[in-house]
Amino acid sequence: MRFVTLLVFLGLFLGCGKEKVEKIVEVEIPTEPSPIEPPPILPPPVPNFITFPQMEQIVSNDLNSLNQADRLNARYLLGCNFYNQGSGRLDFRFSGVNKGINSISTERLLTQAVSIDPFNCVWRVDISEFGVSRSLWREFERLNLVAFISNSVRGINNRFLTQANQPYAWASSFFTTVQGADQLSFDNGLYYKFLEQPKTNAAFFRENLGIDLNREIAEERIHCAGNGSSRIAIGKTRGVCVGRSDDGFFMFTSDTALGEGGADSILVNPFIFEIANFGGNLVTDKAFDFQALEVIYSLPNGLVSGYRLANSGPGIPSILGGVAEFIAPTNVVLDVDQASLGFAADITLGACQNCHHQEAGINFNDAVYDQVIGTGAFNAEEKDLAERFFRQDSFTADLRSANRVHSQSLSELGVSTLEKDPVVTGLIQPLRRELTLEDVAGYTFLTPEEFSRRLNGTNNAKLIFGSLLTPGGKVQFSDLAENYQLLIDDLLLFIDEY
Image (tube, rainbow, N blue to C red; front, side, top):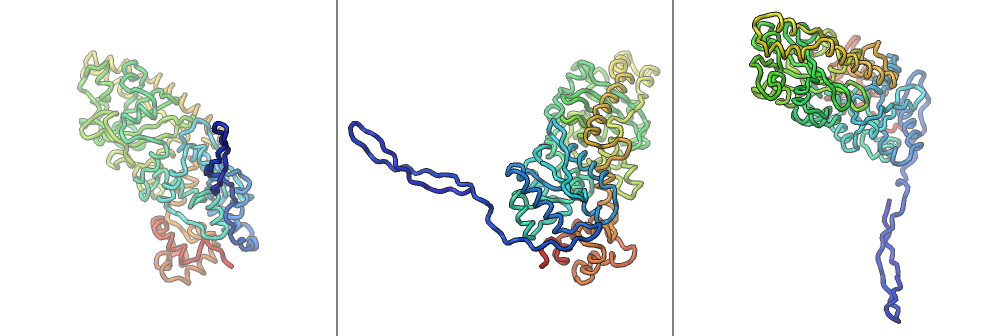
């Protein structure tokens, strides 16, 4: 838009006379984008391969089919590295994009990405449909682990049409960055910003879940279970409570640092502070002194895929007393599944999604009720608390209800719960592992042969990525993330080649 100043002459009748008055008016004139030089002719197609100019032309065509408002919210998540590697399973990875964007959504309606290319590796998303502002996207751009800015003619035009520096991003990098799924990204805070989670637990329960936890407990709408068996809290005791939120379901798990015989064992001290303080009176001093907290909850769109890691606060054994954390301590819980694949055993926000995909609420058998009712270590008031809150039937019914809603939402997105989570296993893990020549070449839109030829002719990039030139050579993900711009500069990527 441009503004043109016009002088408008107004005739005002004053009594019998006529006075000419000048008024300055600014008129908004719509204009087309400033013309830029025409892009170079597309190179000849390569069988079973999508080149960078091809991808950008596909995006250009798509953007020009949209109105201006839609263009400003259009972003493109790329799986073309997988296509060019011949690694297949693009439908599975596409389902990961669909689940992933809805797992960071603040909106009530489910949204779906649109595949815009014949290769099914360029996926358009409308960021407004999952509650992301353009300013928040810019914050992602700043933190994007494997980020590139196109300086080709097509790229510059696409940047202008979307008003974004990175209108396209690698799907793997997007979810690894936003979900804090790696040691390089776990503390960037983006996940909590995308889901608008406040820092304190009390505000989170009030604002995100829409509940007063103490009132829910006073009205006995919380059902709990406690046990000494968990696949992530190995050799420790764990407490789990479930309830209903404004959007359907929430569950929190409280974990100990010591074993069953320790002072923090839930079998010795089975009640969280809020239950011990039932009715506003401290009924028992057998409060569960947990060390780590995880909250799993329904998003407004029905997916049980909102997560929060927290602690109990400094010396406060209260669910409401802690603040958001980015990673769970390994002396309390371990990500056994990812550790078995060679990844770090820390539980990050990104790891939660993998565990709670097939069963959003994982079944958990209670051992607290029999322990409290069946031994003389607990008085009548404590036995009454067990009768009220440790109800396996109600606890299990709530989990089943949450799982039905979760599965229904996934089904609407075309995501199967018969497989593992497609976000973590299809998009995040392939980026986090040790990367081969084919893997890294996939993030350059070059064939492995062309990538090797260019890399061999560099000085600086060869120092970092030279191991890829030897058979079986690999580099760490951190090497790619920290030196991706060096690779772009030395290999002359993401510019026009005349």
